[in-house]
Length: 260
Length: 271
Image (tube, rainbow over all chains, first blue to last red; front, side):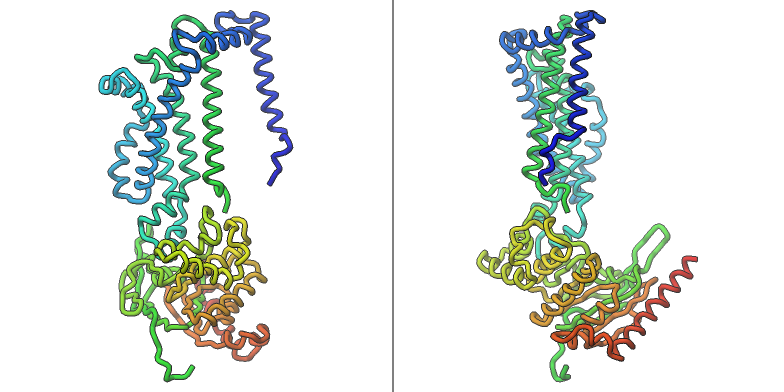
């Protein structure tokens, strides 16, 4: 079980690749192969990072920008979890519910979020609500789809076994369907966070004055590529962290995943 | 058995057909099946693959309803699964999110049996199948044979009127399989349960059954029944000795010849 003690060759390759990337970045900027305004040096990026962290960017510190964004993301994510998971599982469980819900989801799912974002801002105003609604819609579809497919993939005998020891339909839903689907639900959650995260910048492009996505867009307007770099790094690492967190939660909550 | 003992029919299947539509048109999975299962019987069903053995089991379990004819448990038609008819599946269906104790407890818990009673039942049947020391383990930590023992305990704890098993030992190695056969025979002896077991192993059927049912395929129907009592001889004596009696050999050969004719016909069909 404890084979993770030794660092694998793949891990070493990954670390080397990252080091190589930073070395290349340093070399390209140090030798001024490109305009430093276009690609800032690692040092300049770091300085900007410290500056944004301590003094802030346009009235808000980096953590405040990040906090605003995370609040939007988290609210939208939680809202979609509590709606999409039950609805997705029910749709998988009952073909009639699925028949009612699915046309709408199939229709809006491939739409580019910006296409209906204007409508959302008109309906919900330029405050947080419209942004949360956009992110909510981005999260909803992947979670819903994962839940429907998870139910479809449950071994029929799992459900039959419950009925043959006397369980009711309701009990089967909570005590067999839900745990059977847990692993796949987590895959849906991770996809959803990914999609929502990439929608975040779009959400904050319109009518916002804070947020990490807004910071990047605004910095672009002023040709502050160092700030863009800072924003991208922060978003990248935050994304990695969230994904790691979800994987960690999955391991804690669904320890049987991939076994049996 | 003495004839004055009143026989009690647990399950009766009358003139049952099961047809379903497929791409190639209507398929008859079961044709004119008539079967009365009496209390305390140990029925083993043999037949080539695709002969409708599993379909018959599913009808008794209540997963399917016959398209024609009737399936009754006592005086009531079988309309769906119930705790009266426990099923041990070919591949274990223990829930990996529950430990062995919780898996066995699942049925009584769902039926809201009081906690004390539940606990006594689970302990009793875990002991009976020899898994007392594995209560806290997760299903994926157990071997194939142990998983099937746990599946058996999970069914027994509900005290079903009938136990249905679909090739329960099919995936086990020879030695484990023999142990499981001994175990199931002992349980049958102790509890007086009625058992319906599907197998593809003639020796397994003869070593366990009080009645062997041989089915044929396309469409699935019952072609022959044998009343056997080798299982009584095997209890407590040398298992091997019963296998070499004249009668045993005779029935074994007859069953094999029926199945082989079937298989030959199938092969000829395929060509």
